[in-house]
Amino acid sequence: MGKTLNCISPIDGSVYASRETLDLDAARAEVVAVRTAQKAWAARPLQERIDLVMAGVAAIGEMNDEIVPELAHMMGRPVRFGGEFGGFNERASHLAQIAAESLADIEVGEDATFKRYIKRIPHGVVFVVAPWNYPYMTAINTVAPALIAGNSVVLKHATQTLLVGERMAKAFHAAGVPEAVFKNVFLDHDTTSALIAEKAFDFVNFTGSVGGGQAMERAAAGTFTGVGTELGGKDPGYVMEDADVDAAVDTLIDGAMFNSGQCCCGIERIYVHESLYDSFLEKALAVVNGYKLGNPLEAETTIGPMANVRFAQEVRDQIAEAVEQGAVAHIATMEADDGGAYLTPQILTNVTHEMRVMRDESFGPVVGIMKVSSDEEAIKLMNDSEFGLTASIWTKDLERAQAVGDQIETGTVFMNRADYLDPGLCWTGCKNTGRGGGLSMIGYHNLTRPKSYHLKKVTG
Image (tube, rainbow, N blue to C red; front, top):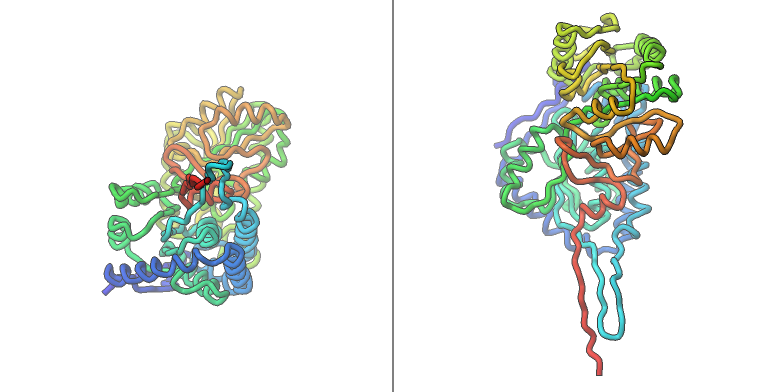
């Protein structure tokens, strides 16, 4: 008998959905079925797999009117933003377009004596453990290329977004992807760890907390199962003296506050050249004071509750500790702030790196802003973090941005933008943000293994 998983809606604290987990024996049986189906799926022509995956993507689009309010109920994103299908479709479409090139044989050479090449071979069964903050877009990053490459996929979604995996599986199955090739499962942590330790999967992709990533690696220890992780972040923005201040404010503050700050690559700390600091702060405060905190089902709401009361409490604690240590909180408590999941977005100044709010991942609607006087000072501060996912640089000087970017310990360097996943680029991190990479051609290479062919011809 399994356990009950409950999705608690941040709108009102009620149980929005419940599902029973599989016990270990039932989970093993599901994985055996998925493994059995994989070889026939991989034997299908590449274009057929692409077409079926893209039909599944289109089927999700047809559900969007149901999905948008469902997401608001599960994790609090306001309905006015229309869900995730735009990014979901963009990423899957690009991965479909580059599949043939990414999975093509690597020709090493052929002459009268030898033919040599390297094939890309699917791992087999790919286990995707997806997060709740962008539950469709983060899942499709791996689900689409894994299936296209010829793997079968087992998807385990976060309890906070309990219904997402079911919807994805339903859509893909209706489009013609065999049920045993793409399986959504409900598992508790112990069963998950046991399956990984038993080598039930050939590759594990996990997006979530540092602690969760460590648990995945511990479970896989000694199995030689590949584990790709995208974990915490504390992404910085740096506004140079020649930056377009209005554009920098609009993008960086949106990057800090959108989705109630619950973005993997959300901006969590901003460093502004002293010559622009006062102007940047004034404009940033005007933006945040214009937000409407409230029920995400209401059209006028621009910032909803955090996904869970405990997430909001961590952000409150970081803010309170910073203020006790001398930080200045600039945004007055908003009317809808209930001390629970509904949290006033906050801008802090007079912050230092001794404060947790500038070191620990906040993953909420708060950002600290510091004044800097040089690239060297900004680089030192940006690198003063255990995380490395993205960094956003604001300047008119491309070469300077490249030179500064080369010195930042991060997975992605943005210039004059932030908080965006370009599916043509590898999505990756360093330090405690994890290892591996998704999207792009490199994403395909991480979801397959190389197999070399050294064929000696019989002559004469």
